[in-house]
Image 1 (cartoon, rainbow, N blue to C red):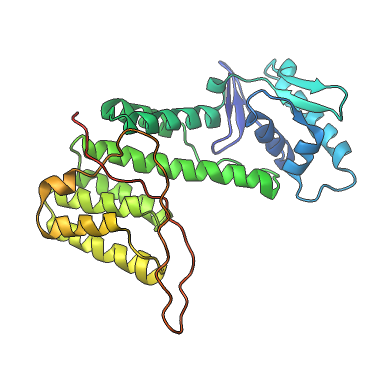
Image 2: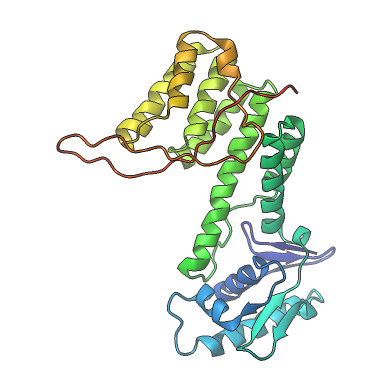
Length: 295
């Protein structure tokens, strides 16, 4: 049994598949599955589907639950959807973490990040690649959802970008270079403010023997982060640029993977406002550099 939330919302069994019909039922299914088998109160579910629940919200929710049960019944899963009696009521959908693509994706990504921090690069590469195979598209497509639930969906998009970025780190550590450029550029197209990916682009070019490409990547990073987004580049990225200019291979190679311990986000501060033009406020998640582990 497998519940798919990443991309097209559907439920699969060994010999059948059901595409969940109607946006409210898809939103209800997502809200229940993201709670990993916990009971969700009626009040919580109403605020997951509507920013301002209408007077008919409770009645509508019962109708959506009944329709979801009907669709699950076609796969003999009707009993998975339980009802909490009393205390305002609630519902839960029983599914093991490995049966839900979004939950499995998150757990694999988190495990891959931990393996990379622990310098288990080969293992991290395999784990992150396994996680990314599950990604069929953003969560919550064509779902009825409140801003609260959509914020949870957006967190998966951010996790997806980070997983792609960390997989690039692992592969840089394992000696891959120029062939990573298309993937890095694709990440930067989606999120041009990600300074780690600009650093990866510089390293991929330089370590692949294209120093001019690395310098060009720096120029593009400064134009994008500095001129367009109004951000001061971090000391780490500036030091990487100097290492490229010095042709210091060890310094360029030595700051690919994060070291042991938790990776704390670093706020990259906006550059100070000019006299008549204030800079916008923005943040970039950046992990501190350390040596690339032996493979």
